[in-house]
Length: 100
Image (cartoon, rainbow, N blue to C red):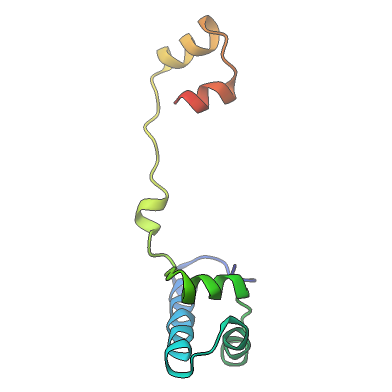
């Protein structure tokens, strides 16, 4: 979790910079997420949650690594299909969303 940073291109580069800094500290000093989070705040004046840092160092989560595939939109179904499900099959909106 990144506190008080809106997601935009400038902040993404800052987050990636913080990530690289964190990984450098982990590699060179073998520090854990607690010490790294303190150093991040000292250098960047931004609070990054310890669980986020833990994901970076233990589960190899890289910020924005799956951004291109994470938010793929699904195709919009045809109106006829939606009408059939809603009127003829008496499905609720949540049931339709689960089916589609």
